[in-house]
Length: 235
Image (cartoon, rainbow, N blue to C red; front, side, top):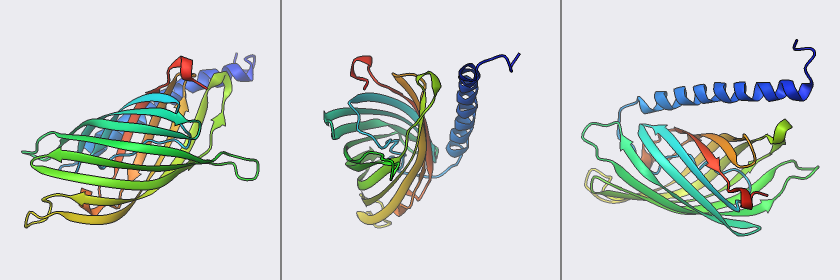
């Protein structure tokens, strides 16, 4: 039976199974991260930025760290080489007595280089500024980095883009010290993730943040979500 199927048909049947397995693993990872109990800051989340400029897309994601975040991202093209973005959402710490935090950020992406035969990688320069407010505390982060990866085209219009996103940031946390004073630090953080194009309009994204930010508890985080690209704007 299987031998009589064409290779494209077999691959098409395997794709939904791959998506289901990935979703189960991602959900389990989020549950494990969210089960921890301690304070964490709202800005500690994966950027989920693939190495390409967006014309327009919308992403909804759940983020697990030492608490749970519900995050929304909107990216809009400014030119063929640049887009801006907005991140916003709510963060609920697993720590007892902690209030829900509001976080938001503005981002920029600039196309540095597209994949070639000599160097099969796409490079996107990223920068931004983000803030969170909770329990009388405020925190600000200013990251600059590069997202790099490669898109592998599959059958039936599907594709997968693995990527890494290292970045350096200036982190400022108000009233975080034992004396209630502001603290600042420079940290190195990076994401490892992938975007799976289910069809020309819908993609599933997953990303893990490895954090080096002392101001934000140094906690890693994992994000799983879906990205919608309006059909009229799809390249």
